[in-house]
Length: 407
Image (tube, rainbow, N blue to C red):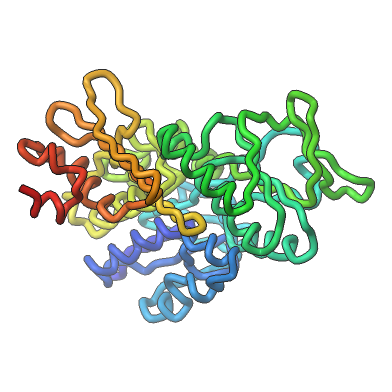
């Protein structure tokens, strides 16, 4: 019997993880074609920050080189963006005219960076921070210019700011909110983080709304204007204000899209031959931008592509772990707390450690750690498994080993 044809649109971390899982389950079921819009093999986007700082190169962060695809008989088509899906004929069309037939299709189109709709966004020197090409442009700019502004005080924004500062630039971070990492940290931890980063030379302009990016006569960025009329000078602007699921291809194909490509618990779209995983997906109304949920989705999609038919994705409890200029932060679950919750906190200003654990109905439901994140994995496990704390409650702050040893 001839093998079925599987086409994967997207050569990123989620799509290729699904392919790895599928090969482990049944390596001979499909003839596989992978389309990648970038000219590079699959690489680790989480490691773009060390590339920006100079600690890593692109070669260091490649996850699957071209030889890997060849060894597994995968047809890899790089630098070819897919422009159309013909569901009636079951064909994928690329911009260079390539046509690939499919029996099953896996969409892993990822996300696109949000660009603020402000005047001046098209100026030279206005960049996003999303892929290796963005990083290369930032490295080139840092070698020629002195001042940078990063718009966005979230994970990507702080990593971009740290990388540019490491390369010798004077960096200001502009953030619409009142605190940094407002989705990942409570106000106390965010205040500690800001103080540490300011001590390392970063400047923060909080609760500021960007109204316009200013350019010079040559069409290059020269400054920023805020809604209150204040202006600051800069040679480089990095927009790190969020991501948006890349759904244009799915919409063109007539698939259901609502804040992402809508999928079931089996990672199938409304067309049962078409699966989707990663940042492009909306599952039960939620789009995930962190790698752990994407890998969980990939495992389920592979289970069904391998015709096992038993996997279910029920959503994820997300966690964030970040290291900026030697500062460790971690958060998971409901770390803010609300009605019916109790917070256990430890604050050690001398050692720069802050821990907050949120308990509800004798279960750990959230954790926020600053300075010491060694037990983050254990806390996340307790949250995910809804483990009854019983006598463990008063020993939680000791961590996994300390709780086991403490009287």
